[in-house]
Image 1 (tube, rainbow, N blue to C red):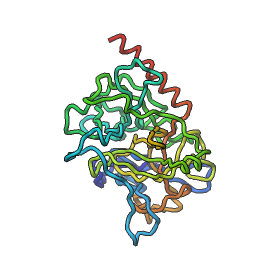
Image 2 (image 1 turned 60 degrees about the vertical axis):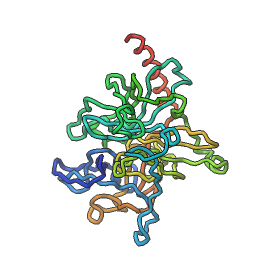
Image 3 (image 1 turned 90 degrees about the vertical axis):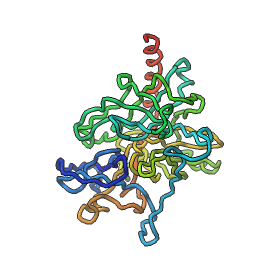
Image 4 (image 1 turned 90 degrees about the horizontal axis):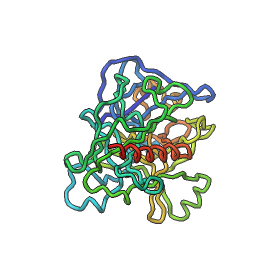
Length: 345
């Protein structure tokens, strides 16, 4: 079953359809899968659609308050300071008049140096009306979530995208859940201030070398939109691991990452970023969160784990689609095809 978030961060309930559960047949614990969607989601309560944030983690002790390590840095109606000193190469996707999620700007100079426009990456489900199971017709990218500034947004060409094997009608069916929840998009006419030299370089992260990476001062972050605050936020010093046999992902497909990066409504499509010695590399795209129904029974937790619940790879975690060699290959082919397409215009 799917749980998600509204663009405003408010809780809404409207009866639409019966909720559906997804069970990993090879795991002992039944799982409640939750995609961190921007607009709609199925709840554990049959017959209701419920929208509520669920992945602000803590130490599991509600008596000392809910821990939230996000730093709200960008976007919204900022006062003072310059845009350049806070540029994080992220923004929001607005489709059919509403903010649907986050997108990251990718540096394509290394493999498509002749590309004139901008390439974005996000979660595929961000582009869908999950009620009607259809794609949105009109989408824009708002750099730094600066929706009130006309010069800081650009139209996304929805005819020129590359999407994974994602089907909104079958989002929770099959062991491959989340593997195809990614999309590359093209902005032929970028926004004011676009600088491809400041975009994020995607790359494969070697988790077997995590210890040496951290000893050298490296850290993993999530950069994503916070709909309630109306800003791009950064969750620093995240714990990120590759999914394996004993956790909620079960290691059923290569490239699934589990993380404890605090986030809420609007974070779908946000970037997991490896930061080391002043360099940033985009290593994953946020998809959602999932949790164990055994650890959080429906009767006691009808909306899923509460804010402040402990991060536990086997009971309550976020998940993301890693940039592996296959996804990097798709990105390279897509970017080169955009060069050819631009030549026809």
